[in-house]
Image (cartoon, rainbow, N blue to C red):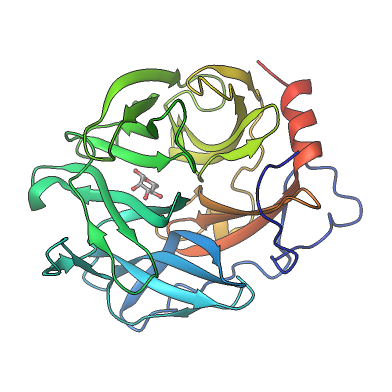
Length: 325
Ligand code: BMA
């Protein structure tokens, strides 16, 4: 059972007739075109959340100079999006604008009284990738905090509530390029600025033998945390990014209770296999409806467009358990 709000108007399609997969794609994929922003070369790996009966999102777009920025978007149905043409401005807590959100792979997490955005930024502008953190109460003004970790690090993903009185964030220490390794770690913080008590969560193995990192914000269940993640295997033709799932312990979420041995979604369609980076499904967000157990997964496809897939919590939990490593 999902512990969370009801979203009766979230996107949903029943599993297509004849489909036996635990996760199925939206029939109108991709939902966001690569040119959805005037300056865009591509719009992909992006995060959405529900707010006041509608939806807001933070979108990754690489422009035609191949610079990476984050953009604010709004939607009434979480499928059709109006995305701002200019990158998201960031402020410090003295209300001074400190720049625009530069970087990639945002996640958005509602936690206590505000929305946090975490993304992959450049440490002090040029020392390599690390986790940027900003918050907003209203999606009008975003206040940037200190970067969470030393470089090189990527895929900072928050838990939607404090656990044992601490903020919790996943990360995946990396290198400065297309990292050929990577384990998932979890760190604790009393104040969202000082991070420590690092725990190892998952190693790359099986279908994701190269690297593994957190995906969307974990979903709270009565029996633990449902974690949807990305994992990568390397072939003679390059890396393949697929989507996996696991259930983590509720109070000590660095402990993996069940890790699903097969992937739950793998690049197969033309928009996942053809684009700027072929063979990528990279999940950054979910929407859930606690009443029905519906889950919509937002993922970047081929580093080019945004796509949507669906699953149902009881079926996914059963699949993870039946196929646990
Ligand atoms: C990762 C990140 C992601 C991207 C993926 C595949 O290292 O850069 O944004 O989707 O590579 O290119």
